[in-house]
Structures are given as structure tokens and as C-alpha cells.
Image (cartoon, rainbow, N blue to C red; front, top):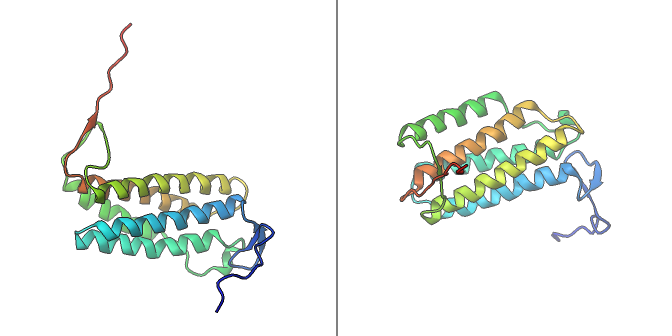
Length: 179
């Protein structure tokens, strides 16, 4: 089986529902950034030693296929595996568990005291970019508000896991400018 179809050689691609769109459309940018997030989470997972966190990330990666599929379908009725409120609730429970295991931090941290946390913080920034792309898409076409909420909450989860895995916190201190 060949992996190239040549159907995209002129700058268009097919969505899940076979609609043709430009490869640089905001819809493609949205699900493409989710694909990027899935990949960087895979890199992070490959470095993480904690099996519970590895399992959480794997489950998130699986859910991100549904996020991408939903974004890659103009006719939402044609994609069956939609993100639901229960997915958001699951993320919130995990966030609460990991935040509960940490000392509270009222300052910004400098991410990356180890490779595990560093990759999770990169993933968090990709997740935030995906959220911005999806919001732009939602101003032009219908996007599930639950999907938007899920991606927002997912960045919180990734932050919580990355912060939990930090081994040596370095804080950013802001000085008030003198007058």
C-alpha cells in the first residue's frame, strides 16, 4: 500500500467527511496542531518513568484522536466519537489529584528541571496553541463548546503533571518597577 495519494499535490486535503479544503485552512491548522500535541505527548510519555502518569498520557492521546477527528469533520453528525462532558470531568479529577500532591505555588516556575517535565511543558504550550487555533475556527464555523472546554482543561492537566514531575523548582520573581 502506498502512503501517498497525490490528491494533495495542489494544496488541498480531504476531511473525514470527504469535504475538500485548503491545507492551510484554519480547520486543518486546528486538527494539525492537535496531531502535533499528540506527538509531543508521545515523546514526553517515552521519558516518563511513573506508570500512572504514562497511562494518563496514553488515555489523553487516544482522546485526542477523537478531538482531531471531530475537528476534521465539517458535518459533525458524520463523526461518531465526540468529546463529552464526562471526558472533562475525568481530566478535572486527575488535575485535582496531582495538584493535591504538590505544595501550592503562587509564582511562575521556570519549566524543565528534568526531561520529563520539560517535554510536558512543551506539550502544554502546543495545547494552548491548539486552543487558540480552535477558537479562531469557532468564529468561522461550528465547533462544539465541549471540545473547546476539553482542550482548555487539557492544558491545565498537562501543566499539573509537568509541575508535579519538576524536581527542582526555579521561580520567576517579578520586581515592581521603581518610580
